Amino acid sequence: MDITDYMHTLGRNARAASRAMARADGATRNRALLLIAEAIEREAPALCAANQQDLDAARANGLAPALLDRLALSPAAIATMVDGLRQIAALPDPIGEISNMKSRPSGIQVGQMRVPLGVIGIIYEARPNVTVDAAGLCIKSGNAAILRGGSEAIHCNRALAKLVTEGLAKAGLPLDAVQVVDTVDRAAVGMLITMPQYVDVIVPRGGKGLIARLIEEATVPMIKHLDGICHVYIDDKADIAKALPIAFNAKCHRYGTCNTMETLLVARAIAPAVLPQLAELYKTREVELRADEEARALLAGYPHLAEALEEDWSTEYLAPILAVKVVAGIEEAMDHIDRYSSKHTEAIVTEDYSAALRFLREVDSASVMVNASTRFADGFEYGLGAEIGISNDKLHARGPVGLEGLTSLKYVVFGHGEVRS
Image (cartoon, rainbow, N blue to C red; front, top):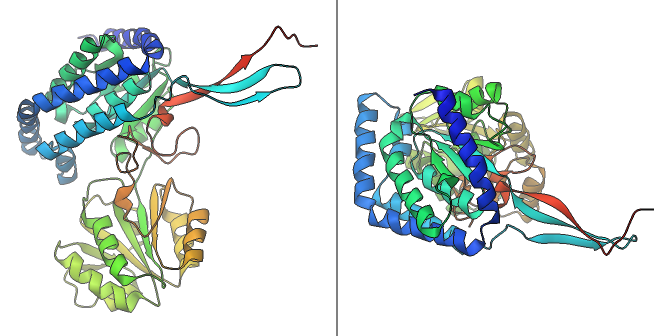
């Protein structure tokens, strides 16, 4: 296979399909989503079998536990994909919506219309569910998509691609509206991110190494986040009955996700009461606590305790490891977050309304939470149906990227024969 010719063919096909997708009505796009959901439900056993092939090969190749977790596609995960597609179909159609209409002194009326971005390239590692989430969101938002999944998920992604194509065909939409790159050659990624004549935006979903490479090489704009260094701050006015399950869930629900807590900050006044109780919970999962001197004194006897080094505050572990620091209060907590956060997700646990509002206003991250686990920073949990990724950039899209993040606004003008004098 000539990778250059192959990728340029995908690009040309996607550009042509994007025009058809932009003019397709919402009912047709929704029908495609529902047909894909039905196909996935019908073929769930075959998808699990394909996924098992990928898992067996990944284990044989020594894939890291965090990536194995992302690669696994259980019956429950398949059901979640199906639910996500149906949720997306039920969402209001954003395309063609006109807003902010204003009459000008000249007589013209000026507003903005929501339109698709065009062709979206998605590059991701391990997670086969991204194939469906990305396809669903791109179809609903009137875009065409080129999906390049990781080589470790090739069997499952091929099986899913056939089902997406089946749904598009039955709905009467172009088959090239969603194309899965059918090669594991890494050169395909290099081509995809340097084809601005065909691709309007790249959305990478993967590890720091992948995204760092794309930042260096891409000539196509990106919607991205580099790290998920997320914090939970337990305030001195926290309800301990809330703080314990939040801090446990934020770390231990899943280790290999970008919205998992990596640093726990605890106010000095409440630390003696809350840290020993949290240690008992973390001990059940053998979580290593890398703690500052003050926290270590309160955690004496904990079997998996280590001294926190400077690099621990800026590390995304994706593992049962947690950095722990005792702080004077909210001011020091926010200073620490400002210095070390990757601007992804932060949470405060407090019953102090003023402290909660201050945290929401002053913490500069894509998602900021009060009395909730950071694990909720997710498009499905936010009611977006699914997400194509999470952005901690500040331009265009921020946080979980759903339908609106895959669209843009253009100005539209209605006149009655006016000319400018």
